[in-house]
Length: 219
Image (cartoon, rainbow, N blue to C red; front, side, top):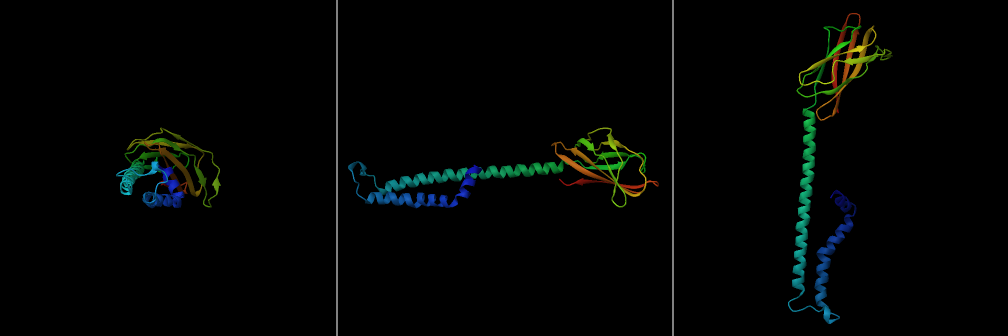
């Protein structure tokens, strides 16, 4: 159906000419045919068969074709409306069922030698296939500090209200005005991936002054 409409849009001038021929040209040809004497007896109209009857018959055919075309257009329009409605409903359901996660220190304060965290699902929606990336550590100038690390999780799925713990295998963090950044990803019940960016602002690693944020990356 969409291919037909695309063809009509690309050949609109030809379509207009065909419509004019069907509406005006053929009735005119029928009318003229009954005004011109038939060259042979076989082509002569029989009793009761005149231009009025033929034009009426042709008009009935045009009316029937018009009804069919309108019905097809109505079905196509309803189908398109349904597709759009289903698409919007799916988008709305995905937004409603998006997990909402919260990140906290597993210990009361930041421990530069023990990076333990708790990840909580504060929504009623499933967070599945949870993955925590390696972290990047940068100093006050934004320069990257080389520190090999890896995250170890106690689980990979969170139901509504559930939490899991994880920690990083890394060396001790030292310095002031540092920023530790990593990502958390998960899938909802529709298997759509959601990503979150964790930012740990460390004012002073020695004094255990740090702030943690977890922000959802917009889809």
